[in-house]
Image (spheres, rainbow, N blue to C red):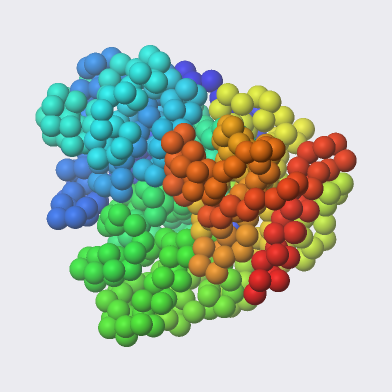
Length: 539
Ligand code: J2J
């Protein structure tokens, strides 16, 4: 079994007694639909339409062959695929035999993938030959204990499609890991030097999905456009593709949220529901404004879920106006807690808050700097404990001592206020992270990499406001005496180290010195304020 930080017994007992944890595997919802409505369409991907029975058959083929090769409980997998049907087939296959995957983003490169590999030592690697990292097999040497690698587009014995398509029978004793064990690892947006992993159990994740389905009213008639990166927690579970499978609806896959790609898909497949980050909503709104015909293309759209980053009230109000659908705001995190505005909420709640928690057992604390609760309407630090909020990052004991308080509350690093009868409004952040249009960048990770360049003496990454993305990243650099380096040189340095492109600083600024705190650390607060002031003065 995979070691992870469990919920204390009395909490587990309570979550079971309350009916939150039902001791079923994460495949439960999907398998129920396979049994009840085998011919219903589960996934549309390009020209392919997979029924529930067909998707199950392919996932079972892969699971069976992996099982025959000795894969099972205790094994982990590192998976990286673009938005394709195979992503879900593999996830289901691995769950069926109790192999726990990390599903990396397709934008991740050498550095992120190496970090995941060293944290989980995957026995299985699944990737796409189309990704730069897998043009050859060099990366395999970085995976200690690797027993098998399969690739999309391989064409040889390692061809993933071959493993999915060749009929095979699952042994009678193959089963998912027990419901209160790790089902898979979710990715943390992070604020530390290395990307952290979040163990998610069947019980906790399944609960968040079941309740999300109920809150968002997903049914067999739901046709959900999956246009965000498929492994992201929002796209997987809020209610996400797994929520669609639970309800028996159809997932329509898009590679990305570009309206020129998505609008025709919506029209062709009569899509009813979509989840987007705010910058994508802005793109969709502009597309409709620019071409009234575009509005007709998306006429089947009934519900838009928006989350992942700050969503301005004015833009929220324009969702029903311009896009002709209902809006539910979502404030979630891969670590657990998810909040939704609900159908039937007042306009004030729908347009100016990020909703309220899924569960009556989500314990929310909003605290001032001294740790005392703040009154409603006052911003404070959000801490949370509950039936689907994790209890510890994977193999990160030192970090866990500061990420949680003594009572097991996860300290989110978000600043929120409670308004309109228990709804939360996200007003800021103290974690050292840049939220670049929903994509999270841990400042420390990039600063450490910048410091590896010989010309760099000090480096600080801070967020600056951006009209399109909400935030962009700004690297502020002090060079060593007598050294020279340009933005281009440092950008190349970061790319050569192998970071995902979305983490590249949008701008570089070279300064003579950085403000320091009393203990000699870079004073990020002052720096952020200085950058903000600079930005204002340029307007
Ligand atoms: C402001 N900030 C938000 C929102 C997340 C559903 C939706 C989103 C995520 C997600 C998710 C925000 N307004 N509506 O996992 O299941 C910021 C907060 C939060 C961090 C989490 C889901 N919604 N945020 O975005 O793990 O700062 O999850 O702590 O990527 O995004 O990021 P992530």
